[in-house]
Length: 356
Image 1: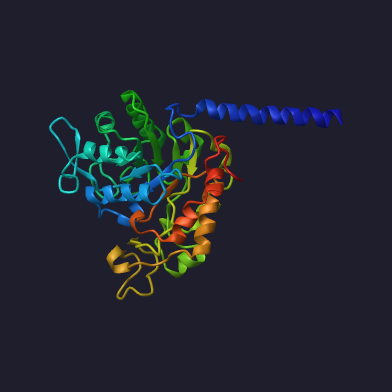
Image 2: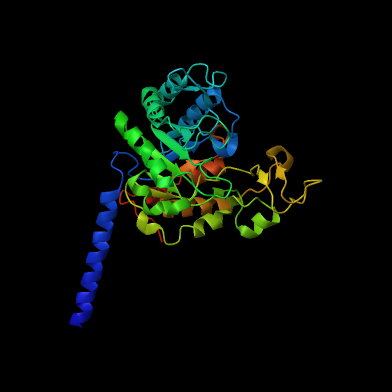
């Protein structure tokens, strides 16, 4: 009995020390202590947005009650960039943001919300716009000047044709960590390298969240994904959940595993990419061909029961709660899911513990 008791005490000490070590390694930027709640433009708008759309979204988040429930971040994804000026400073696309990015951030802040932007560790973003490689300092300074509160940092164009990294992901991400910290502005920093290089093992010392897998698509499980012949960089909702197995120990206040944005309020999505098998409805397709979003059309979508389950699982997993819908056009049923205060409270528990 005494031996068993000593073993139990030893096990408890090891568990406590492990947790303390993880906390000690967490990034200390004072933000993101609980999973971020907000909205991201990508799932619904892709590149089809401008400053008018973002203003309308910010207003809708406030007027719908989402802001009051904790959804504070209004995050613009890829495609906002223009060119760099003679000093290497990134400029917003003048057609999309003629008032400038500081004016955009000011509008969001005036409504009691936070403002987020996107960049990429490579020289180009996933959609081919200006990335931050070699300009980390300049871009971080611009974000601080504009009043940015959140940065999603992608990892496109950082591998050669064989899949080999040009540099270790941790090194690339820490370079932007240092640049952001040097500005003195607290910025929630979201790492997005799709689970590469076991990012959960070091992500907490570099950022506030880290993507643990490939992009999420609005289908329940792999069976449906296969029926739709989705490309292999998209995964089902249950696939993302299974990808969290064994990762709970890496999450805690200030750093969280991220299975990707929420699908609640989407009645389908537009896939794209090189296909291993042809979608049944795409005429003239051959395996290995690139299928555009326009060719593919809208497919998938979760039932309301599946959406409720999806939202509950993300809350249990202490995942960031970033809406991927159009907040201007949410149904009462969708808002009922997203405004469930008891479920949100599980996600926002200050202990930051991920369900197992």
